[in-house]
Length: 307
Ligand code: HEC
Ligand code: HEC
Image (cartoon, rainbow, N blue to C red; front, top):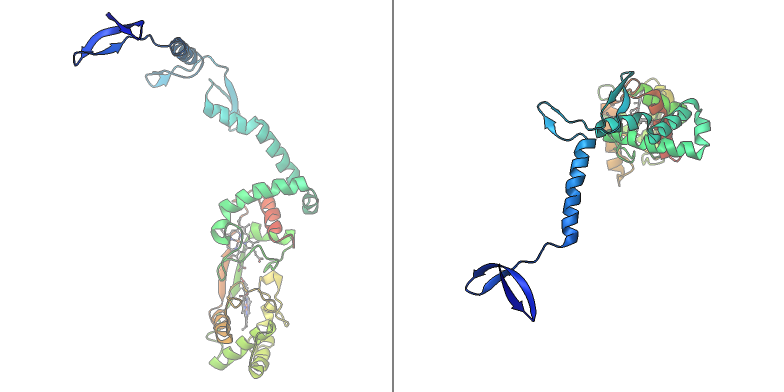
């Protein structure tokens, strides 16, 4: 070590010199830094004693923190402190879990009208219902329940194939449904197909050819086509067979609404009549609990504005 003069002060240097006169000061590490360093060392040692830390063979030091007790398959299990057991215990007996179970129990015991008149229960059902919907239903019906024309029905509008009362929706989700209509391509001649198509369009006021409509009506409402059997005489649909209402402007399979001219509309309707419909809404009973189906029912019911 040697000493060098720096603007009138004396400072220590390490004694090394480079290039003849470049020297390194020997300043001490700041006190605060040194003490923080000692503190971290002490913290580490205390941590090793209290928490699981050092590996030993196939095991490790468990630490002396309080033990955690939780239940596995109905049996109580006590282990040394660790975050995984802590999480399991929180999910079983934590404040949030207990609260959620309490809400779940309330919803399970309440009637739909009671749930729908209680903002707190609606709020709870919608929150949990949304997660359930995104996990189980959104793949087909879309994130917001908007559906895909031709494939999966829209759940946001207030038009229902199988009924829009809470009981109907609950039954749809629980038991599932098959939307079935036979193919008529072998039954009808070309002209009959044109006629019945025109009649279907007339039901929503979109037909152009009165004579076709008149002939089509005979097919639709009589034994020739037998459409009335599922769609009823007025074409308004029958909820118990999930047939579409053909008199409104909502189309779930034949994408008529987005066609501009009559030719394109006819093509869409004709396609459905010739190919028929066969699509399945899966059964959820057994895959979801009764409470979960109930929450989903409230969620779906509210998607359509509760109509
Ligand atoms: C594999 C695709 C698929 C999944 C997943 C699915 N659905 Fe469906 N859902 C359908 C189809 C297809 C229909 C139409 C059935 C028909 O044509 O009658 C339908 C119909 C419905 C209807 C009746 C609509 C009406 O107008 O009456 C409701 C309500 C419904 N689904 C709710 C749900 C809920 C809630 C879930 C999640 C638990 C779900 N769906 C999951 C395919 C699916
Ligand atoms: C066995 C019952 C059944 C018979 C018979 C039947 N339908 Fe259907 N029809 C259905 C069902 C179910 C749907 C589809 C509902 C759904 O899943 O969206 C449907 C859908 C339709 C649609 C599409 C509606 C839309 O919203 O896109 C048209 C058009 C239609 N039917 C016309 C006819 C005509 C015309 C006949 C007679 C030639 C007929 N149906 C006979 C059950 C039937």
